[in-house]
Length: 325
Image (tube, rainbow, N blue to C red; front, side, top):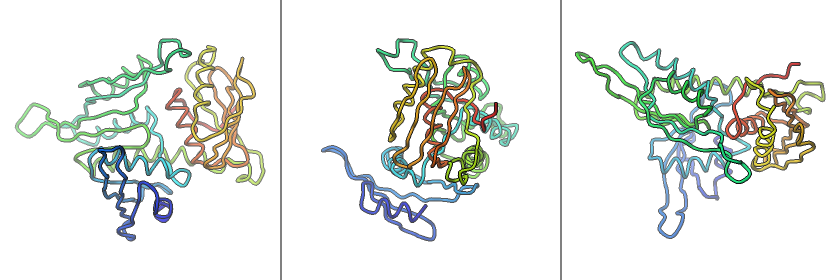
């Protein structure tokens, strides 16, 4: 990971300089954008995760440095490295566990959520999604139930960790944090607790998913038979023609890839080739509830995760399993 980043960003924008090889600490410089833009500089470290082949990029910074510099580095690091995707039910379950570890005089309240929902307007003449921002003082259960009822999914969720001080009956906020779907967290306090209960558990879900996706390519299997991956939904969403069309549009928008559509109506069948990674897949809508992803000669777990994350973020989240009849 360290040598890969050093080579890839030695003479590009942003530029990286390894400050401490023993600790994997980098200095990053980003050229100014526009006439009045300022050069962005900062330091970040790469720390080992709690699971094999997982690393964490960590920095103490303002959001501008993270948004403009770190996100650009992560985006340009593919296919050698890539961010993982946090599913909505994974975030909910991890927040529940985190709250339970804080003790009886503590609680978590959701203070803000950014959510997407399918547009009610004709997608041929307008965007497919609406984005809502909601400021709340709801519990974890309440805000996730509200999203389920409204058929919304989060792009980010901000939490407040609250505690009742001694000789008091009122909760007060002692820390805040935000979780983003594409593998990002920020927080301002309780570093140890956040890493043990939030980061590690979210990483565990992503690790289980990547383990499922490993070794799926035809060449990786030594040209032996292997089962594809399925995305299962909890209802028959593909009974509606417009949902098939919306799914097709999402695949069409998949970045840095070539697509060939074999069938689009009444069912969907396409080939997707990731030209950055070299992996390729066939994508089928197999039933009203099921999408099948069939790996071809090369199908790395990183390319698998990138394609599934795109489907989950832009279309709808489902359950990932090995295909079963």
